[in-house]
Length: 289
Image 1: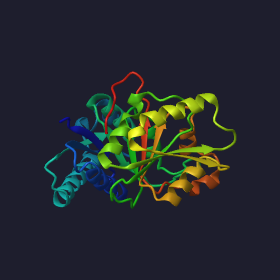
Image 2: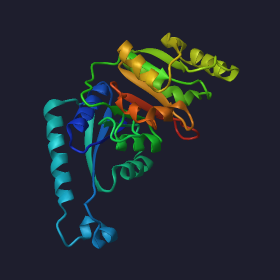
Image 3: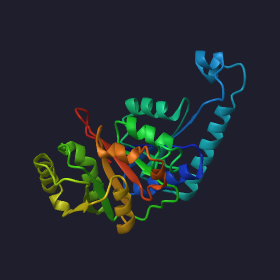
Image 4: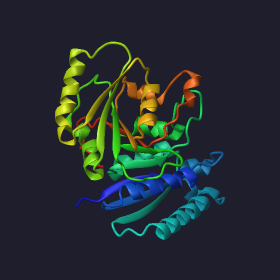
């Protein structure tokens, strides 16, 4: 059985710990190795840091001490509260920005998924995720599961897959969602927000492909009319008490509209359920959850 490799970024906040506990419950029945990552950046960059990092610094680096202490405490808490023989752990710390370190690690470590916490909107352009989360989702070539503050894992019974049917899907693009539905024995709702026109011929063909692919799960296909993205997605989730929102990460799609909204009033729309962003695999290997 393949061991899944899951990256867990942490800043030692309550939100980060909440995401870690969610991940350990989410994957409790699967053989996994979790990598707990903390990154730190000093308030100013000294020449010795630029040359060789803290190892070469003549002055003590508080970031290293804080990182080590925080990671040790995190592992103590994990070992006290979660005793799962299927799970192994490794801690990582780095002098780097979080986004850069995550991108560098995912390029070499062959992770299956990133699970991280969210803090809600942090600026006029951020609609429902913290800045770090948005940046990582945009750049990541592997699935990212964003867990809102306070969201507890109680099983996944119902999943919403939001789509605009604008582009066709390859089967390998949908494998992550298919595996998740099988593992969690969850029901699937495919949600299309109809803002104006009826489905074009190409959209109808793409919808029919999803009907065939997910046939064994007996999905519910829903069209919400007369509502605007991304508000309609949040409203549907809130009204139907779904446990997970899934979207395919594509450029120039309504996925990006969900992440970024220029109107400042959109800041009030925060995700209330975990959000799984799945990148198009293109010609890379298929990633399984």
